Image 1: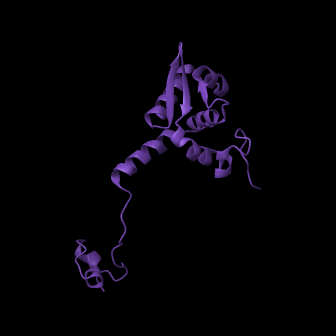
Image 2 (image 1 turned 90 degrees about the vertical axis):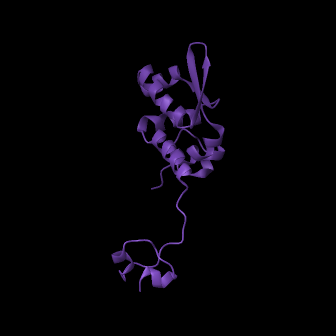
Image 3 (image 1 turned 120 degrees about the vertical axis):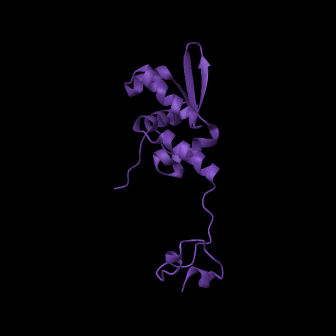
Length: 141
């Protein structure tokens, strides 16, 4: 049975697809809206780097919820310019806020992204509430 016969309307696909009995009726679902897909892709590109994931883990675990570039360079063993480039990517992705204090830039995870990133990085939502040590990854064996 063709898709036209199954649904009572033309699928608009090539005729050989409509006539293929192994292809069922067209899906009646809506894809992720394009604008939302673009925002999500930008966010995912922002965190799709091991160094940026380490930076986010430091920001999430920092006592005041923020860290200075000077702290990050020391913790990660990277040059200030390298850390700054990663921070720019995180800010541009909308994941981190930046504030200038003296000659240094301070960064914090945006409040509306905090719980999601915490769950993503630490592996479960329970740690997002601060019930476990945020600087330790719990691995099930």
